[in-house]
Image 1 (cartoon, helix red, strand yellow):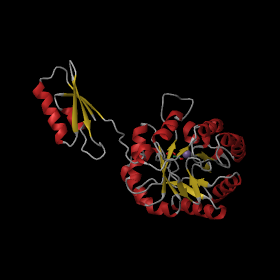
Image 2: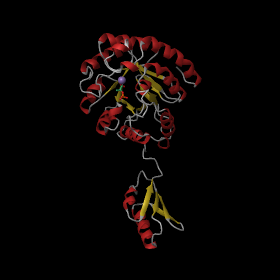
Image 3: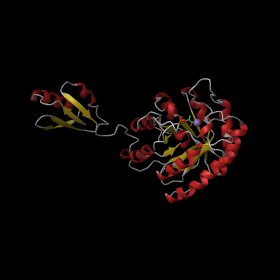
Image 4: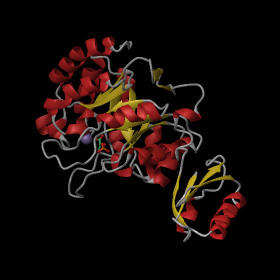
Length: 340
Ligand code: PEP
Ligand code: MN
């Protein structure tokens, strides 16, 4: 860590800070400038007590961390390279087969879910998505079919040999949702619900961790740390757009963040273009961008009749558009050297 002291500090005050740095287990290396002293504190920030408390000392101007706060999610932390998550017989991660997760925003009925499962399976999807517990902004909107929705997901999984991705909204439902799914989705609204994330991590299921709509990249990676630190290495980071001033789209899909988490972390990255823009007519273009950014897969909302969907109708693609999308995407996937 770097401790920057206030200008023109008497030497005995400088010495007090140096002594404290040493007391906290770091080796202090002061650099005495003409005006100010800067202390380089040598030591592993991840195993030593933080020096950040020094920031409140009257002698100190500021304290900078040098090491990343995310210990387990960072590339430096993992010597073996990228994490490959193995789930439902598939490997997800760098260089592996590009992963398609598709299905309705919400599970609505047997017919809706089975027809969607059939349609996405025919296009090569290996995971079916669908919410049984829905985090709706208004309590008066459809909240999901809950247990019945989970039962339908299990039925579709069996009938079409698809893995299941579905959201868990509450700690009390983790066991139940885990029993009906392969991947537990932590939604954007819960990405900093650390007790839920911890409970979900402990289920041992793969966690798809959506980025909160106003979360910084560092906060998102620190949220993933709650899964990793609880002994579950199987995390998929999911970029789903952030809230900006723009109104042409529901959210702004943060493509730079995708590239950054790929650089910063060894974890696989999935892009959700559907929540990412909120418009069915833009989903294909954003999927192309996701492939170009070397994302490891896509989470796409597909519905037999989006105009009648019980949630997120404006952003769901119908079967025809989904088939076109997969077809048009294939050359892009091949171009980045990925098996399809
Ligand atoms: C969803 O996937 O339907 C959903 C609610 O996602 P998010 O948490 O990203 O809004
Ligand atoms: Mn949705």
